[in-house]
Amino acid sequence: MTKRAEALLVLEDGTTFRGEAFGAVGETFGEAVFTTAMTGYQETLTDPSYHRQVVVQTAPHIGNTGVNGEDDESGRIWVAGYVVRDPSPHRSNWRSSGELEDRLATDGVVGICGVDTRALTRHLRERGAMRVGVSSVGTPREELLERVLASPQMVGADLSGDVSTPRPYTVEPVGEHRYTVAAVDLGIKRNVARRLAARGVRTHIMPMTSTVDDLLAVSPDAVFFSPGPGDPATADHPVALAREVMRRRLPLFGICFGSQILGRALGFDTYKLIYGHRGINQPVLDRATGKVEITSHNHGFAVDAPREGRVATDFGEVEVSHVCLNDNVVEGLRCFDVPAFTVQYHPEAAAGTHDADYLFDRFAELVEGNR
Image 1 (cartoon, helix red, strand yellow):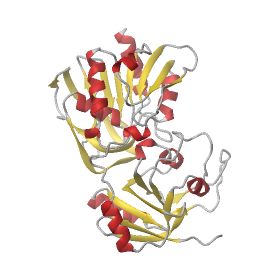
Image 2 (cartoon, helix red, strand yellow):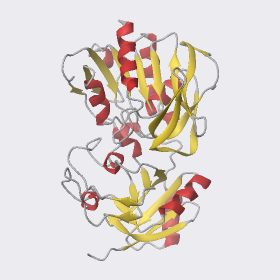
Image 3 (cartoon, one colour):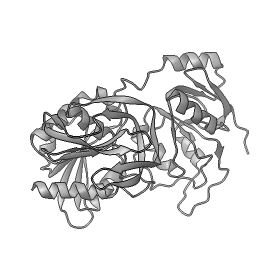
């Protein structure tokens, strides 16, 4: 095996980890976050919601199933960097068409391996997500730390425009066409359209800069606001668009960043979580059914809304429909006077649990009931 270059990881508080290059040799900066998922690393890497984040895998052994041409959630890898403990020396999966490290190198993704990811994760849990730099080109620690401190923070970052489609495109339904949905792309994953297509939905994926007239031009039965990266406090245009959609009483469903957009449109604030929720094993209570769902999460911000009772807004009464059982963070909103609801987690996640897949059926029922 070719000897790896030495690599250095430095957090903004000066904490340092040494390892070896994994993927591309170079230097990168972003927000250090960890995901607890034990599978689905290809979907994680290609999820636009991880734009400008350096992802730490808590599962120690990464790369053993290789990569393939089918499981990408978008057209490219979006993570700013990648941190693993033990990269697999060989792939072993019948669907594999290549090695993970080769894909990272080809796509220019700078990573580091041989790191005690358990210690790094514990540090981020105690101190919070923070800026980080990874270098495998010999940059001295002190110089790398200076560059980390000069890099942009996630608070105040307006990133959805970076990941949104530049032009509209359409995903056709599987089988009979039942509904048409205009999906505002704030960082959409391919599996959203797949889950809608399975329910007979023709999905028009629209740029985040779309106006309400652009959405209405496709004669939608409903509107969807997608997941995406960045600080929802910066997303003034999508917030205004959500308000216009609700004024027209079009059914609206938002996931993750889309949930935060609707929360702001309803008049609630958003805030940054200490270290966020990322992984596929997060317990959430659906208050409507009393059921606990094991769900997939990828969010560093949340909606600040009263956990109990209904709240009066410009669009009628609203309540928190879902809460995370780990920390009581708001994980969903339901409107009573306009046809709109959201969840903060990812019912479309792949790889991920399927406990929340019913939410796409709930969306279809909302559309049907609004006709």
